[in-house]
Length: 201
Image 1: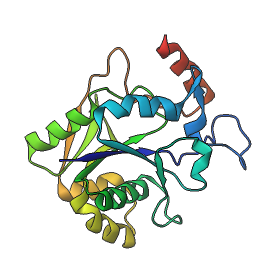
Image 2: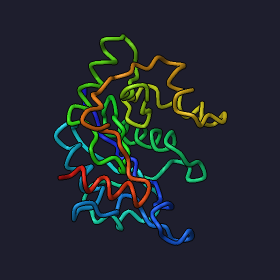
Image 3: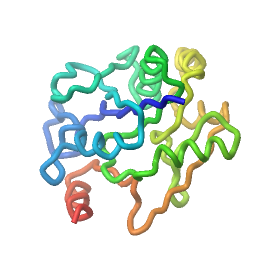
Image 4: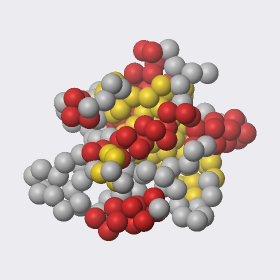
């Protein structure tokens, strides 16, 4: 079972203090002297067979040798669009599954992929997402390529919410420890970035 990792990097840093018309890429925010994208790749690579980045626009801005794949329909934004792009790419590459992560979450678990896979297998369902405490994190998910066509049809019909679509097929919740802090803490604001710098220490 070949599994591709998809880093969802389409988010803009609108709440980081930049101009609204030019907020920049979250992926390129610096944390501890390195971009969030670099940190995501380093953490993800040991867990996965291959990594691609999902983002629209000129992929060269990321200065990476990894493939940068756009949404199939750039008029449709949101995580499901990124998931669909990842599934389509993985299908063409002969992979059976993808695991998605958000680029702005620098401390996601080192056992994310194995935890998601094991939870889906244990519960006998095709999909899995991460959970800490009473919060689910549907962007951190395990997705079979076999459901790509179904997702395309659902999005064509107006589907946008991740949990509504996953609920149709059965989605396991892979529970991860939230101590000493929630590993799915994400960087949205300047205050979050300060906190992330503190957590690095």
